[in-house]
Image 1 (tube, rainbow, N blue to C red):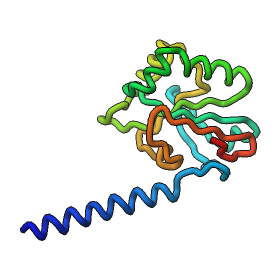
Image 2: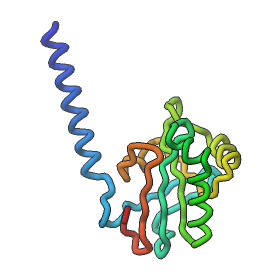
Image 3: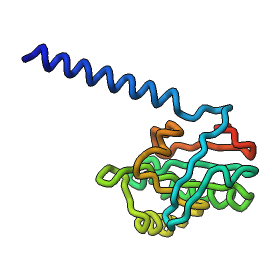
Image 4: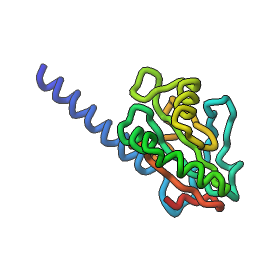
Length: 156
């Protein structure tokens, strides 16, 4: 019986390592074309990254329950950056990649209330409950920031 459990544990560990390696291979890389995506925001509008070609785009991974995210929002740092750069024509997407029942999950209404309470000013708050967008970019923490230049290349 112990051999069976050990074999199962070894198999699960191997699968986890392979999955992590596969995700790392497919994650966005600085200097390469940013992976295109389509996502729906907290107001129900669909956004396609390709539609913003010609503009700088910021992707800010966000989790209302994360102490680091809260620190930047409660101090006004993130909101000030959002206002400054969107006023200069930058597209700023706040991205929430939390699944229902998981830490950080919010409904569209809850996210809109939080953004209003914090006086946040992103272009839109993108909802990614499947985590597909987060995996596409390799977002692992919050806040986690990515910057795409007007040519569609990931520069940060």
